[in-house]
Image 1 (cartoon, each protein chain N blue to C red):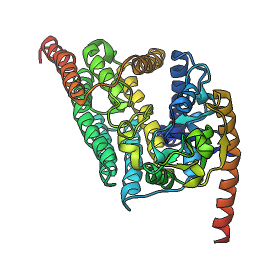
Image 2: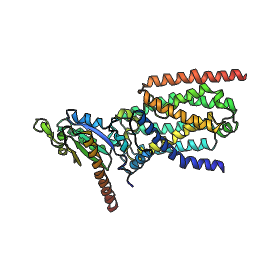
Image 3: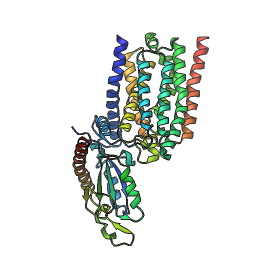
Length: 147
Length: 285
């Protein structure tokens, strides 16, 4: 019985997104999609979160912020990059200030492509992130036993 | 023997009922927003998950304070359900609240410090109405003891409608419901709204949540005292009051602390104190 899978709390950060993906992420919280059915809560606080949902590419301004949020999250945690900008930098990849996708700064577990991805795709991505979360928890347990 | 059973029931069953109550609360809230909502046992999933997470600590003492908060809430309940002194129960609850505030002050975070200050203001707001409730019950039943208040089988609510209104008003603050969820809210999408709990991760957050369940059940026990002459009436009153709180939670936006203090003191004075003055005049004491 794993409770981690039943109560994944997310924190959403907008890198340098055009807000397209952000709107779709927030659409998941609306009555139509209602992700709270799966126990998913948008926390807005890294210390309470299990899944770091990030939209938009990484630029020179937000490198430290993204690292800071990631480091403040308690283990086990996963990162989900939403939209093509978060995956590779998208159409902004050659901008002078853009560093690239989220994986340029922190390890990413799940990529959800699309410009923007549909709410169904985001929910599907978050659900597959739960499997990774579970694997990470098992790995954490093993390392604790061996240590 | 009965007292021992009640105490044991409180320690073991209160978090179970509190968690289920929180789950029902979340479903009703979701239905009010035309959503489906999480399963009833969702609060338990959340707490068990939090217990399995990493424990991030900023200040070595912060989790200790929260454990003290939980312990004092349980002690308060033991005092209450063993039929002890009502006034002592209220002050023990205040001690628990003080530990909660100390815990929020200990990590040096502006969000959590603002949360702590707001929690102090909230305590200041609800304390008069709680004490007036205890005084009112003493005047009606001639006893401070919970078991004697119940044994008197007087319809306390008939003598204290104003006091009950003042109590329900501050109950919104105590249950951490909108419009008075200033210090920490269940619907927090920002650090400032999460306030007190901002710096608590994993197991510490689980402890806070469990203590909150205990507190909710204790407060519903207070409602029971007003209706203790009739079990069925008491249960209906408890359910109706909690439903009302959920309705208020979903229909009001968060208010400022100025308004919270003014409104709760005004209600305590207008309804609570005047109720007690009337009671004294009519009793001819």
